[in-house]
Amino acid sequence: MTAPTQEGPSARVADLDARPARLDDAGPIADVLTAIDPDDPTDPQIQRYQWETAPPWPRQRFALERGGKLVGFAFQAHAPWEEMPDRFGFVGAWLHPAELTAARLDAAYGLVEERSRADGTRTFSLWLKDKEKDHIAVVEARGYKEERRGKGWELDLDANRDRLAKMAAESRGRMAHEGIRILTLDEDRDPEVEQKLWRMSVESFQDIPTTVPFVEPPFEQWRKWLSKPGILRDRTWIAREGDDVVGVSILNYPPVRGNVWTDYTGTARKVRGRGVARALKLETVMQAIGLGTSRVRTGNDAANAPILHLNEEMGYKQFGAGIQFLKPA
Image (cartoon, rainbow, N blue to C red; front, side):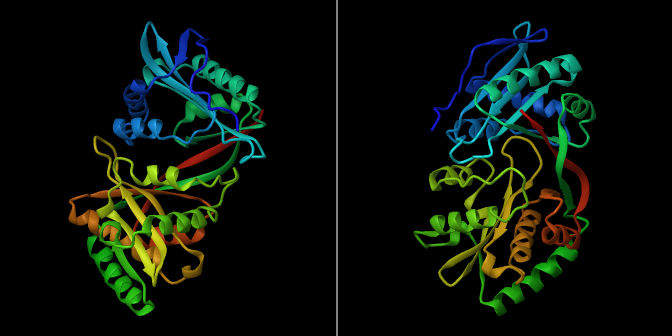
């Protein structure tokens, strides 16, 4: 395995300085990302934790500065090539709206593409929100092409309270009939529950529509995701059939700022079509209502028809889309 590259030499990005990002930069970079999209703030605690616990992949993070002030961020990373034989590399760059120019953003992409290409990447991959028009114009000018889309959904819990309560009651009855228990992770006393949940999650990850191949996370890496700020065991809903864990749905409650989002919903293949995902998602939103949450958000690949249908049935309204762009290296 190639050794992870956490730092690299400093560089110039147009008229900005690009230096290796430090862990303490995670919070200020979360502020930059929040300024870019104040409708979907980035939580600084989650940002820092994700940096601390990122997979041990080759990666470089750059803090972009002007006059010593942090104004942006850029990165490149990829899975170990033995786990990613198609050699997709992930790149991205962001600048505070007050500092954004096409020339600066273009130069930032030039930096991370150069570093990624030197690592052996064959195809660059990045995701942007469809409302980031100026950003999209820059990457398209660099040769990126749209590959696929994900849809963003928001559920007004106050407006849909009665509908959701009725659906939840129906789902509880169906799960009882199916012999499936729905409970929170903190209520489960099985000492192997996390191992079972990990195996089920890996199986469900493999069925998500994707272009970039799925790289299976080792148990300890996956467990770090399950322990990140905003994910709590008493708000993590699982489904059990006999000794097996057959489903999960989790809302993430940012500890500092941000929207409440579905962090993940997935089920084992053997229970698909039996209403398990529906029951789990309904428990998460009913719990959110009880906690005083007024809105929750979720995102799904545009080709994932079953979950899109469920979102519509629950009353979610589409508010935007994410776009994946690819470019040959």
